[in-house]
Image 1: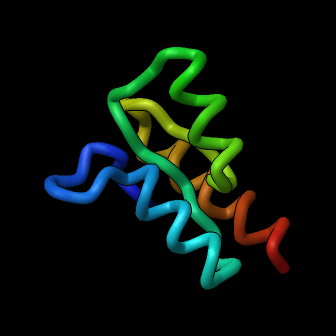
Image 2 (image 1 turned 45 degrees about the vertical axis):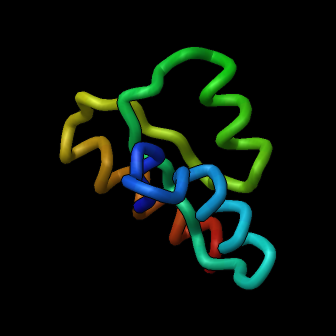
Length: 71
């Protein structure tokens, strides 16, 4: 899980760096809920994008789905 609103380094940059070095699943969790924020997050490599507030049940289901797709 990656929060986009990290202090210091933006979460989008963290995602880019992760993608350049690893294939670890990334689910972005953020209060940024505009369409452009979602599209950018997915285009830079996030496997899923969840906006706050969110249901913990839904978040667990999304984590399981991403892990299932990754094998």
